[in-house]
Image (cartoon, rainbow, N blue to C red; front, side, top):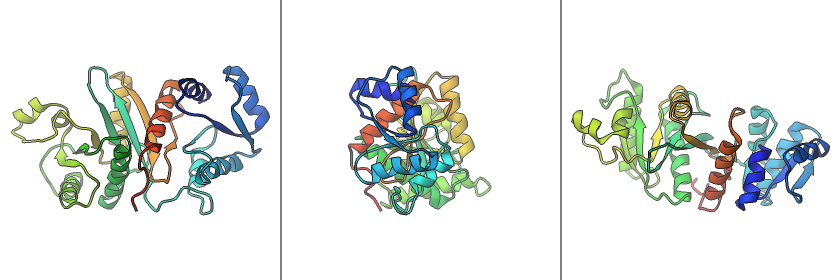
Length: 276
């Protein structure tokens, strides 16, 4: 994490306030050769450190909160604290951006990290979170694919029913600006040739900006496959709070953490988190 912060400072995209046990933090800063001048806020306990970091954001001293060496449950408890937390009333969800070798565009995926088996109502909230973040990044009308195993609406496959309902919500103007199609399978999402072969007329095939996954297993598996098989680069954030939240995997590389910081910085400059 500190290597990523060092690079973010060197690149001029962010400044850091480090919250926790000051002697321990200073020892780590020496190991990573951090430039002088990084602010440290001393808190002895992990729980107090998480709460203080969140308070720095809610009070306006910082724009982004990032999880360090703290348990995820303690971190999220601080984020949702009733007094100093970052609550909006919306569902928290994860948004990942992937840079895939050979592709000319970033592709966003949600939700492969927070919500296990979202209902239709929860999928709507996850989609709203992602669209607001993309709007804040300047993608004003994303092409959205609601991923399923095939394109036929089948009551025995609830994900296909949800996909059709989400597309209808978009057509009815109940979602932020987007072009939404679903149900739609991965081959059609990626390949216009596959869509033509299957006789499917699609406005977004081959040009999808955002993929909404039916459950956490699908999102997790697709994301890790792109990273480990496809050598994709990834940035990820938790959305649904008043400010972007950087909460990366323990296995994430410094580069991946830096990418996530950069995406959070970009979103924080836009009109983020303003929709009720």
